[in-house]
Length: 555
Image (cartoon, rainbow, N blue to C red; front, side, top):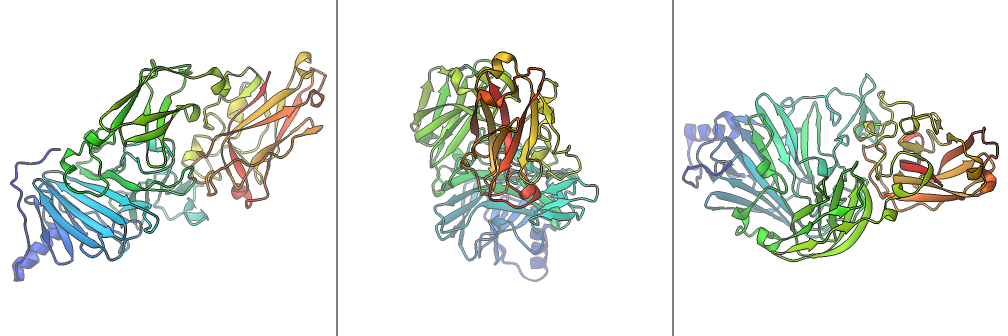
């Protein structure tokens, strides 16, 4: 939505008696918005967008204390406001109007936070600049009053279920599980998150996440809801199952958008949102479009066209990504801060090519056709048998899809135990996506070899996407040969398998199995036992575990 024709007016409230009471009622949500402008009620700066939105920001700590849309208050639950992290404390808060834009600036130590309103829009634009670790700032949470958007989605726990893990994973009476972690979505899968009910949509449109961490496939909590109220998040840095160091600097804009029930305008989405109107506002760390560059590739060869390909750019200061065109692999990533980046091509979520690129302000770095060497994709290796394809994900394995929005104990999960027979046609769907030391360690895979195959040594590969408590596979073949215990690869140290995420650091374990381990009778099955080993972890689903990408025995 563009600015309205209303003439910008700066409004201040200095009325007495009954008139004062009426003015207070209007700001608290009993009347609709009027002309674009702002006022000071003594405790808050009050901004009227001139559309249907009035919001307040505390002059003391920069909290968002009120969010009134079409006369209804949406902000707050449990006596808490909406804010950065759990609230900043005493801050320096200022406001100024520049034409059709009002900007509220919040300074707390080295942190700077901003709210901007545009005339005639039902949106609030937010930026957050965290310069260092001296200030905790991992999220902005929009707290929403109870009862306005009730639902029973995976990331809700409205129906007072029972806590089953760490006080943030719950089980309902019917055995289904709920948690704020169960969003289903990777960062690259969504542009906005929120709810719609009763002809009103309340959304947070995410930023481009250039100062976040974890890349395009990272998963973090996006919203929650209980009988007490709901929360919508813009995660500035999330440590849960994190694979990268924290980045610092200005993140945003992200947008609180209110609608008449529909989705927010695509003009607000990361990649399409333009904010030239903010170029001269003096936002700390702000870099306009003219100070950014672009990377474009004419194509990518050597792709497996059965899978999507993503091109990511990352360095210690920023991250970006874009999709490669399915027909030829063309890609274009825009809005990049100047610098030198590692460019990575992902087949699904598996890195299959890397190079270095340098981006300049106002320039386009054009890359000739990228050729992915066949040796870079493990799926290209000749195999006697293979369970699943190599994609950097457990997709296709038993329970894999469910685990992005449910706990492993969920009643909808198929049994985590059960053995696998090569040649059955159900090898992948029968193999569990996760293995735990305390749940299903010792899983058996049955397979036959020809006489020629049994006469030679072979390499066994097991690909994993993450691990909990250093869980890793040790293998036994026919109870006659046992592999060494492999060293644990670098993986996140937090929970992962039980809170909706399989994304860690992809790693391939290789085992050189001697010919003496195989059975020479070709009518007999060879038996591969996969154990999960680790000296860490707890019990059950919090015992040491790992997520599986693919398993194969090379020819």
